[in-house]
Image (cartoon, rainbow, N blue to C red):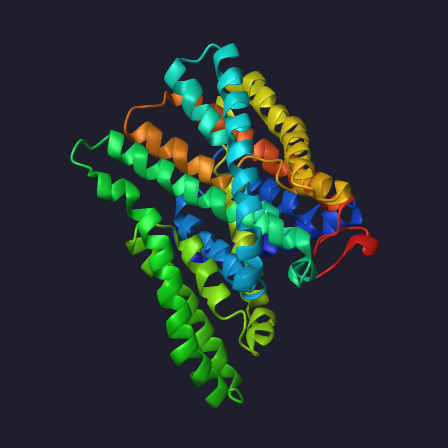
Length: 389
């Protein structure tokens, strides 16, 4: 079995996805859940057709980068600036509440204080990929919900990066204060530099050669990945860099064309992302952590939307917007998976607590995406009345 042959892997993923997606649509089920289920079936703990999901993990993560780039294209800097105060209040307040919830569940499940702290930290974040993948593109065209969700997720991602750096610093005594503050210094620097370069160079190039579609496509991808890599070097994440790259081009007349042109490429990588997520689920560990994982997952799915609703209503948002935003942000984040990996590497988290967070995160991914697809407008809704691009 040539598990390391990328052509073989892509064949398995997309042929299997086509089949299971067909079955899911006839059964009126969410496609995201189908992709995760396919990963579980083909993964190392079931049929073992793919023995090492890490082989395609890096490839699938490119989909998140393109997703954030496309969302940035649809959100002008002025819109983000208007929401920054509200997004900061909402993000910080909800993060404190979610930490307390996760910490309490960890203690009740008889984990150590350190384990409970990291479990609480993991519950602070919502999934960028779920929240934004299931948000219709039209919701970002001068609609407040898209602006609110993107702003909250962006601030959460910044906090997550700081947490990761702090964990890494706990495992390396030589880590300096500058290394911990680097993301805070790097974000405005990259934002200003990318805005200026896009305005002076990129915009003029696109205006000069706007009739050559291949060139626009090439420049867009190069700009997205270039700023994403620069952000990584500056101590931020690829995703934040890609979002900044998109925002810097948002005022360009060809931004809508770029967004449409990159959608198929984005979807290709996102299918791989959800497949990898399912393939990475360690089935043998379920018995040890299933009840605690269910409690953590239910706490996220049921209590997070309520807290978001209350805080957003306090900020004078409409009741319908506050309710839907809470549901769309009611899961645990993919950043939480990275946090438990780093915490385990520096011996701050037990193996059982790590397994707990991984299982709970995947459970919330499945339940949250399923609920959103059935209840709210998404690009992949089964109900035609809710299907919106």
